[in-house]
Image (cartoon, rainbow, N blue to C red):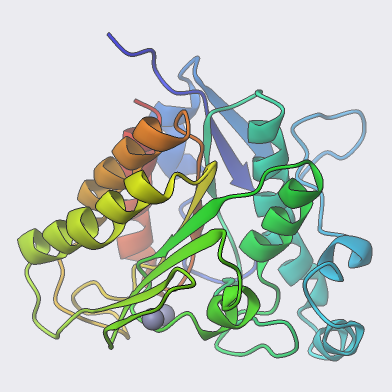
Length: 282
Ligand SMILES: [Zn+2]
Ligand SMILES: [Zn+2]
């Protein structure tokens, strides 16, 4: 029997409506022995305090000019905390303190490139975390992206990187020799077809690619009723979690970081996120 995963939940500071039910909605998860909870409340002497990304960290990926432009939006601090959660999750896993993680974010990653941002993404937390893991000698990574929209920022950063497998579920089919893959998700797709695409287009590729870490950009905006509605149900995401986690078990000792990406409904967040975390923490 496999041991339960040690799961870290990273809940830095936020504004906005969609996460208003958290962390209360995690009540029956947070009391489990294999779950650690990191937040942005008490900084002093607290190993579970989520630190914001520093400018030095951000500049491993983003241009100085872009960082300055983000400062002028008024969202710099919140965006640094969102990226900080992912960075800390990556470091905790790399130090063997936890096996996998769920990172709550106020702003997503995947529309933030080296020198541009947009679509409520300011910094690419996954890319910054990967830059830091590379400094520790980790070489191969996979990112799977189930947000409804194309991950133009992530693609911009890793387009030439042969040691990155980037599988993006979006509007087009694309595939090149550098490990850049897009999988078209048609409108009105069933959960079963989406799950099958995850197995065929991500899990099987990841198993032969052999990444040392897997990052999952979990947008729920493709759910019925959301702004990127593709027709999948609110139960689809936990099924995807199971497949991605099982791929991580096969190739990288379960090292998986799930990062909240697009999606706006508070009700859907409160339904989907605890179910995904329960899969991770099994
Ligand atoms: Zn989106
Ligand atoms: Zn794409």
